[in-house]
Length: 170
Image (tube, rainbow, N blue to C red; front, side, top):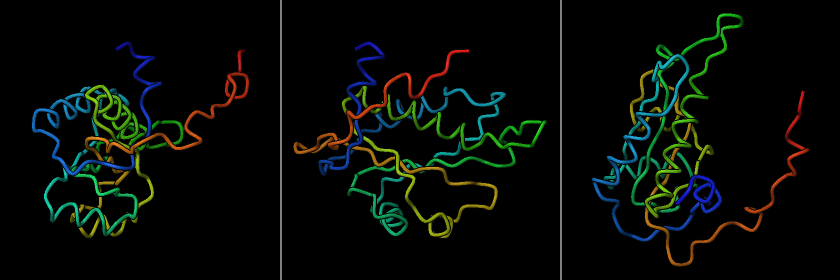
């Protein structure tokens, strides 16, 4: 499948089969996360692979958007390692972690699994549940698994703005 087709096929999966993701699939997803571009190649991303019953319960306590997935990737960045722009000290850890998550979602799609980027979570609950040190900033949760038979894109999935609404040529 070419890249454009992959991006067009991908949608936010919110219904999963009760089947595990294999260790080989998890490793393939983590490998694309490791190879994702980050500002100045600082690689501040820290990824928690949450697959145990106990770990999944911790995720469920932090968000309603868990969709009973069999696997979650909790993606954080280390604020002590993320690159800061010299002009204004803008921290690029959030951007780096988002790029990492995007690559993970595309790999997940390529493997015919499903995911969705969950940003609706209580960060303090995540901090407590996973004993996150202060320097780790949670950015998102990727529920992951085999899409259920009834899984389908949301109605508004195909609603895209026209290019002239999002683009300026200078």
